[in-house]
Length: 173
Image (cartoon, rainbow, N blue to C red; front, side, top):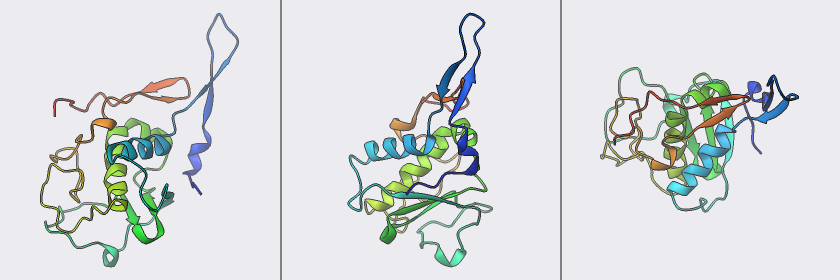
């Protein structure tokens, strides 16, 4: 079962060209694409199978946090979390509320998805000390592990007739 944000119903849009009839353009599904790229990064599908992806408008309760080796950065918010025993990844819809948001920040979204899929391969947050590893529990635009997943780099997505690519990301890493 795949539960998508309500605004995901904008799967197709009409593009008008002065010399042709309207053409239907489909949109890239950032959830499916980021999951596919994460599985490529980890070299396969987790033992539990393809994870169920759900959304929640609520923040992960502090009591559910996995212990981490490093202190959590001040003011951080959990973007996604994984329940390994249920083979489920939950996306914080207060941060990722629509496909368009996911597309505009696809590098970040894909990095976060890759981190979460890593939990299904046994890469837990506890014990991670290499800040440049995607398995490291904290991710921000200035952290060493941001943009560390080659599969997620320089991806152009389609949102109806609009191509979206996050050009602000430096691909020098």
